[in-house]
Amino acid sequence: MVGGISIRELPRKKYLLPGNPSCPGCPEALGLRYLGMALGDRVILVVPAGCSTVIEGLAPNYSMRFPIVNVPFASADAVASGVAAAKEVLGEDAVVVVWAGDGATADIGFATLSGAAERGDNIIHICVDNEAYMNTGIQRSSLTPYGAWTTTTWTGKKERKKDVPLIMLMHKVPYVATASVGYPMDFIEKLRRAVLIKGFKYIHLHAPCPTGWRFDPSLTVEVAKLAVETGMWILFEAVNGKVKISPPSLPYRDRSRRKPIRDYIKIQGRFRTLTDEELKKLESMVDDVWDTLTKFT
Ligand code: SF4
Image 1 (cartoon, protein in one colour):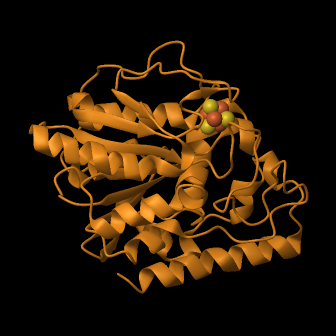
Image 2: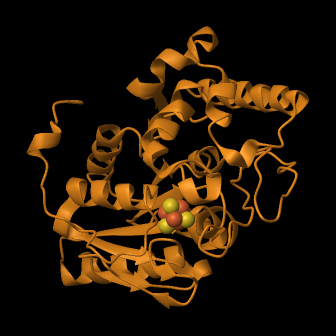
């Protein structure tokens, strides 16, 4: 139970159907289930290429009950803006949701994301962040964290993760939040609050991927929780620019209460080349993200 909502009170209708292209333990599949539980039949999804929609990069595969507009990588938010404008003219009570991976959000799709945010278009953009281009073969994105292996960073990425939630906060949009597949009720509550706000809403969903991060598929939720417990991922919500750390992350504002980052990285094969010196650098980057964010609280 979080904020008066019990998981038992949420709709049980399944929006993700058998035959979907997800790997075992897929965080995107979890996220789509939670999206259905939160907003149900009101959702119209706008989806660029990504794990949720493509099998081996060949063909869209929509094993979902949501109405879906499939779009090229770079145009998701522009298309969503058009769909939102049309539904307003038609007087339809639908919620237009962009469901985009980290590449489609922070790299290839960033221009249309920023444009829709600046115009204040009435959509929700959800970045499902599995921290690499998974559906095309685990290539690095700007949201891959420092030190992580991908097929294009064999000795670990040398650059830090781009902070897209903060960038969206600087767009002065009415709603920005982070979420995690390890905390479904927190995500569902944020979706339900976002939908009540008119204008552009951005939610960044942390989505640990067993295939690309090299951990056992049974551990998806555990890895997601460890990201929060070590401070690697901070859950927060900002309404009209006022930042509040969300309850699951609140204890970890105090650095001494965080679990060691080593606990998070040691169960993932993608950090296997990380040296002690690089781990220290990663730890200082995490402190830096906390320091920057808490200045807005
Ligand atoms: S590669 Fe990762 S995100 Fe993509 S379908 Fe598989 S588990 Fe899900």
